[in-house]
Length: 352
Image 1 (cartoon, helix red, strand yellow):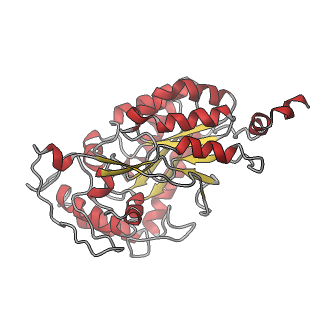
Image 2 (cartoon, helix red, strand yellow):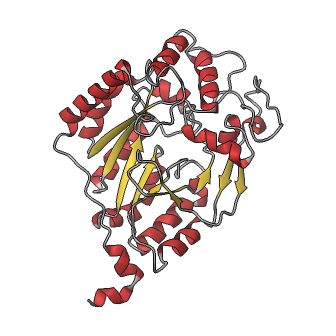
Image 3 (cartoon, one colour):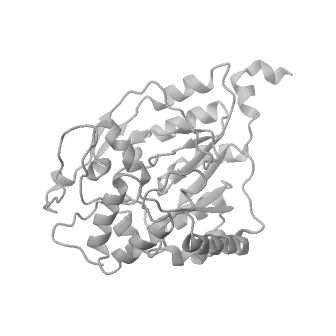
């Protein structure tokens, strides 16, 4: 691995790409004094949405609703597709995405208003579908925990996806929910190589911490699915079998993957990072990514965007299915319980 003198340690994106919705021009070659804490500081901005639940319209996503307590994510994963949402808030998809975090402190209240409505029908929701609900500031603000309190109060099913071991803080709630089949947890694990993790996902939990999280959640009876995502050809696709074997032994009940796609500004941000950190293999990695998406970085086609197409994508898909068959053949996640919510929302129903 290599990086120039202008490489920003502790951040994924190394540049601020222009926001297409306004005329501000960002510095596309930032030079930061690594001793200057202010230049690397994270800013938290309160926002007040009218609703928390977003209807999922993609057939590639198994759950019907998503909710995100935070917009922007301090984890700094350089490949993150959610970066492209930050310009809608007036910021850049680059370093702004990691340093300007929008906080929804009223999230739990808004969720409760929605799911206690007489016309609401229980349907599993995804926490989070965009940015990580257990990113570092959650330790202080506990917005995600307050949402889980509401979901438990109304016995509403939820699927959680995170790459932060902070989720173990909420074992008390998750254990109760799991006992009634109200929760699944997906742990995102991109690599078993800690050095690669530090470069690619600078502020996430370490590899060892994530493996420990999978093991502990499983021991407490909480159904765990491993998201090996994204697979980045030339960086981590060779780890498919090892990730499957390790996580299955730790108690995970399922495994899924997505293939990296570099839509919008993410392509510029990722390529800049790749050429600074892996200059010797940058062209090879970029060409492999394009080969999986019809010669392009971008891919928005339902049914194709997450798995790719072409011979290289087929090799990855075949390897994944073989690994899953070998290590997860007799495992599956339990179905969500959708019946309890109606009884908690309408206590009189329990009399029948």
